[in-house]
Picture 1 (cartoon, rainbow, N blue to C red):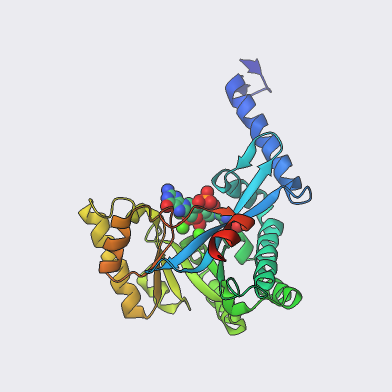
Picture 2 (spheres, rainbow, N blue to C red):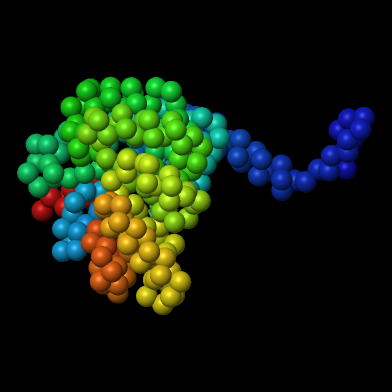
Length: 275
Ligand code: C2E
Ligand code: CA
Ligand code: CA
Ligand code: CA
């Protein structure tokens, strides 16, 4: 133990020290990732019951020079803590909108929608709506082809701000999907008030849907709820034909998951879908 001050004795733990150092390095690297053009977008198909591609979810990747492709699960929470998510999140929307614009010239791609994940911190920035409006103007993407995925944490943080902003963005023509639905705490009261277009059934419920009666019951309830509220429903994490069939029999006709395609770089996505 080292004496770190008059009243505190700090124990020196080399493992903790190196974890902290690793984290600090990652934070510093993340701050520069955007400028160094290390961020890229992957696209994962969203399909209908016939397997026809309706669009894609845009998933962020970080090509770190030493670590290789870093998963967003590792750096998004960090980016939220440091605030780096704000410029990064804007870049994601810009890049997605530019992609939509580019696809307008390609018959096989021009109808696709792109679903973009928006973190709570980003959404609650005072100028979020203005920024999105500006991006749409600058890129000339069609707002009807842009879908924003919000999580229940966005609503939970500031319900009134969320509803007001969603309304404004809806007026522009953008649509909304509630991501990871069923994993948070959002009440039906909120759900009724939010101008949503879609609920996304979390992959945690889909995984064992054919074997776990509880998951099956939850999914059935979510689907019934979307019908009652007049919302679309999509299931994520669909990995097997059996899961698709099960969902379809219960009224969910839009899917995303490895069974239909992994998240992939844009060129691969275009080759896959545009053919
Ligand atoms: P998410 O929004 O729930 O995205 C779905 C995750 O499930 C993705 O992980 C995707 O690759 C993965 N996935 C897709 N199909 C399957 C499947 O069939 N089976 C399984 N086991 N997994 C599947 P990914 O790409 O690692 O992203 C992780 C999370 O990072 C996302 O979860 C999202 O919360 C966040 N994220 C990704 N991109 C962005 C972004 O641009 N902005 C923000 N704020 N968050 C992002
Ligand atoms: Ca998502
Ligand atoms: Ca999700
Ligand atoms: Ca998830």
